[in-house]
Length: 325
Image (cartoon, rainbow, N blue to C red; front, side, top):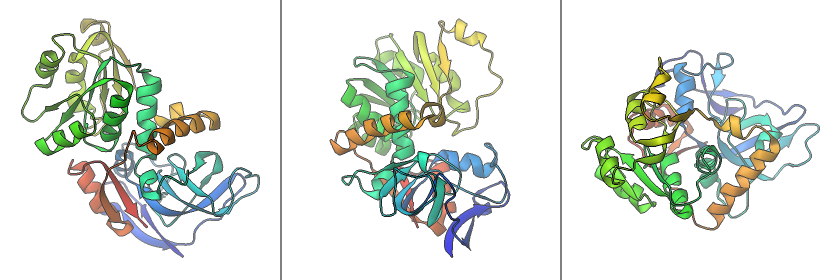
């Protein structure tokens, strides 16, 4: 028997239950992983609340983790028991001591990257990879706005943008978070609780505004984000922390300067084994070189998953949060 978190109904953090269950055996093309660390992400809250429907209930939770291969199913050739691995996609159920998932979603973890680091950055780091290197292939010299710059994704984006020679303006909610974002490489920060984001962007850019805005907040920042773009700029909406963007009149893109908008996801980019490996190689490269460092701001036990999600939703976290099975 092994511990896992599940939920039988959608709702607040209280619906999360710690249970004991027999780990499932890997089927054809699958592997079972003994998790050493599990990543916590906003998408987990979306599934718990029902914003994103789980395939069935009761359901496990979580899609990101790192550990050691415990067993392999038939037809798996690139992984074997004992391999150090990491993953960020696949069926829900990473909040557990053991997780079984398709082997094609699992990559070998370089010896130089610790389990906690991998669990704290696989989903977030691959998200930054597709945002900065694919959704809009930054080449250096651009000015971008990145919301929640002190969070898990934002902390990685600040460092990677600096490495690319990009001026990242980050929004934050406190001086402490501004200091963290700036330490990580943000060119400038804006405290949205005290400053007008659009006006501050206009001042910082001498009226030029931004080439791209990366927005994981959603409903509360949609209009502000559009107003921070230069003509023909790109709005990248990749999260719903404040709720989903709804009832949008597409004509507003014309009114604000022939803007572009996209709503990307990791599954939309890492849609083949080859693309996943390419993205992981890019991520692992900047980690091993030290150009990007992962800040594990919070560690919780598996039993504290509800508490961890409350802290994340309340914007009381910095960097990445992990669960330790």
